[in-house]
Image 1 (cartoon, chains in turn green, yellow):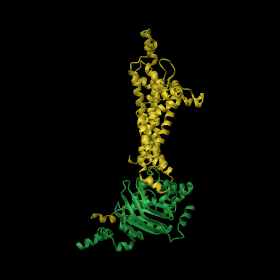
Image 2 (spheres, helix red, strand yellow):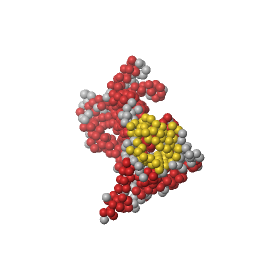
Image 3 (cartoon, each protein chain N blue to C red):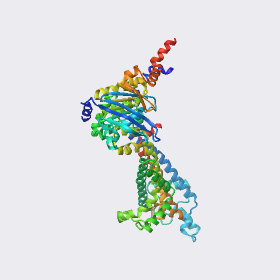
Image 4 (cartoon, chains in turn cyan, blue):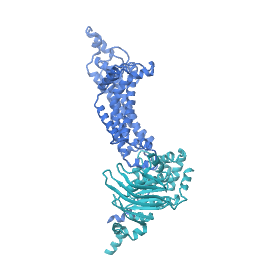
Length: 286
Length: 349
């Protein structure tokens, strides 16, 4: 099947050049306020990058610039966003439509809201396979069932006919993930994709990211405010605050030995309010 | 800090597949089921409405003191003649019996005959219905094309000049009543620039072009108001749904923009606009009375008006029945369309 072939083909031969190359990216609000100020990072093919920071730190806007979908009025004012040699800033709408979905996929927080409430989830998956992947109706249906099954869903024939409000958050995130990877992209952006899920489901979905990455050689940008999540799933880390990168480096190194006061604060707070930290304090009190 | 304990407590209960098994065999929102429910609900409402409206119109006719015998026979009639005539029309029978036989006959396609011309009401209606349906149908088509086009263009250009222009023109149009629009259109397009006839009607058998030329002005007069309302509702609905995450989601999948707008955004954003169309259809039917007068068209509206002025009760009843039926059928169609478009909208119920 053609979609199978495309997933296999995404593992690049030239892995030495970075897939994503963001340099000195500035993003401004309509009133001229800078929301992202001089962010730079690179991401190798098949690599993974975590972006942490409080809400409003510009982490989501940074990833939206990679998708060319900044909110109304907000725009990139300077810098470059490179993707596999393409300058994403110069793309027109038609060219973007060739990049999104097939080369860059994305999943977000609150998966239910990213699916059309009036269309069965199966139809939304097969729509992408048919319109973008060029599959026939029956081939698309078969491929959709395969994909959902490979992402750990059961009774997929039933799930395909259901509407978003009939599925749980974990199931919806799997459906969204299936839609995001169905065309075999090279980069997956996961923006707080596990935040709204309860802890056991969150672990399942993070495991799925690993599985999918290993299978398809996918690069991952994982945006989260949860240090535990990025520590678990990424090799490199970007800590953002007020639109600027305050610290970056290999994830384990940054978290084990934070240099910037803000990162130190994040790590400290995380330790204090995590389960481990809580239990430690309890036993100390007793 | 009770929150710390929740993961362990909730873990078994929040098993990923639990919700699935509950809904598994119900498939509660399959489109076909939604359509069937909408049809059933519509019919359940339509039948009592039909009964009540016919009862009310019949009662109004019966209690209006219209005495056809005196009217038809004139002043020279003797009381005995009048009595004989009343008996012939069945007016000496009690009200419920008159209504019962009217309903019984109506069910068999017999709406009685005009008191004045003796022409069967059903025949008059069959003769004039095509005129009214042509005007109302074309008016609806104009409303849909202009309204949908205007609404979509305005929504996609939100805040820009085009959007403001469409919004302003729509607002202006909704303040103009159909008869004023009709007179205005006649002055401009039939008198100043004589491209269309000032009024009248020819059947479609006389040639489609000629038939259409007689319909254009009345249909515009009737449909402009609906198109303006539709454009405004559609703009609002579409602007709202274009801001929704699922539109962003569809863009992230690389779907063509046209498809994102027409399939994903429009499907949810069009619901209020479709409901507005449903509200306008009765007005298109009712507005025909005035439009047909302005354009001198021999339609149901003219028939009703003439009958009302003469006090020709059977004709009024028949014409009203047809109007009520048209309204009920159109609202049924609108509800079925909505159920088909938004299968999940019934979930709150």
